[in-house]
Amino acid sequence: MNSSRQTSSSKPADTSASATHENRVCIIGCGRVGMASAYALIQSSFIRELVLVGRSQEQTEGEVMDLEHAVAVPMKPPVRIIHGDYAEAARSSVVVVTAGQATGGPEESRLDLLSKNVGTVRDIVGKLKAEGFAGVLLMASNPVDILAQVAQEVSGLPAGQVIGTGTLVDTARLRGLLAEELGVEPRAVDAYIIGEHGDSEIAVWSGARVAGVKLGRYPGVRALPNYGDLLDRVRRAAPEVVKRKGHTAYAIGLCVQRICEAVLRNERAVLAVSTLLQGEYGIEGVYLGTPCVVGKNGVERVIELDLDASERKGMRASAKLLKDMRKGLPEKDAAQPGRRGGQG
Ligand SMILES: NC(=O)c1ccc[n+]([C@@H]2O[C@H](COP(=O)([O-])OP(=O)(O)OC[C@H]3O[C@@H](n4cnc5c(N)ncnc54)[C@H](O)[C@@H]3O)[C@@H](O)[C@H]2O)c1
Image 1: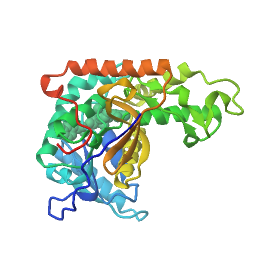
Image 2: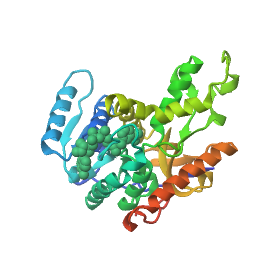
Image 3: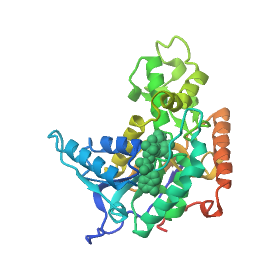
Image 4: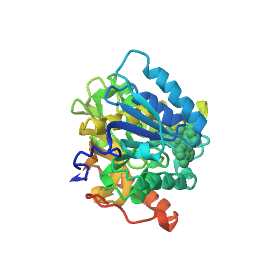
């Protein structure tokens, strides 16, 4: 099933002081992920203004200055870097939320962060709403699927306009591993990780292809890749990095840049992001990662992959896990799931 999402961004051009700045992206949370995203974003020629909103005034000022020096290097079109507040943030086409705690070590799961980060996200999105934000909201803070859902509910924005980075980074990791196994570049691999961005995510082996050829039939493959081992390596990828350097940042920074680019350029790119499932895979009212068509209104279409029985079971287990976690949230956060279309 492919679900189309009509959103409300076809609003008339507003030329007032509070109008959305078409090529402005804002990052809220100037830590490691926020700044890796900012650094990736300023490499792109499509962005004209980058707003940083941080908790520490002085540190954010330092980040702004550092980036200003970077964009002054005469290699690319200029980007205006703004040390902003929520009024500036709300005028952005895309606001990226990277605020909140990260896992403290390889044994802490992303879901363990829920109680620590849900209040932060609720607070940030409430402030954006108060300033009239009507653009695309991209959630990166973990646990990203649940927090994207909380953000959607607090914002009142149409579901398509609130996106989680989802399994884009996990999909990149899977494609990288398969590319190595098969002796091709990662862009040649068509394979997806879907479900929770976390330990219950699944790999869609039944649909994995190179040049339209199923993995097992790809010429030159000595043996089928060990699927269980590959999925385990994808799931363990972030904890293995955290074990060695304490955090992850570069891959997610580029994922943020990629999603922002798809929105600002109205690309209709197919990306594995987290979105509200409304019947796809037999799942209702849960944010999960799946390929989506991403354009100027955010998620414009949800693509339901053909899954085999065990993949379908895995996807449902992922949904149940997140649904159960959400039941533990205070009433305020366990609000009604969003509508597919219409501003609200
Ligand atoms: N989606 C993904 O694939 C992915 C990948 C890596 C990390 N993450 C998540 O990203 C988040 C950030 O990770 P990090 O390593 O950058 O952490 P970090 O500690 O380096 O940075 C977090 C930043 O958030 C700021 N912050 C906290 N509350 C704020 C508020 N109310 N307003 C503005 N800023 C606020 C802090 O001051 C800090 O600078 C974590 O939740 C982490 O788990 C997600």
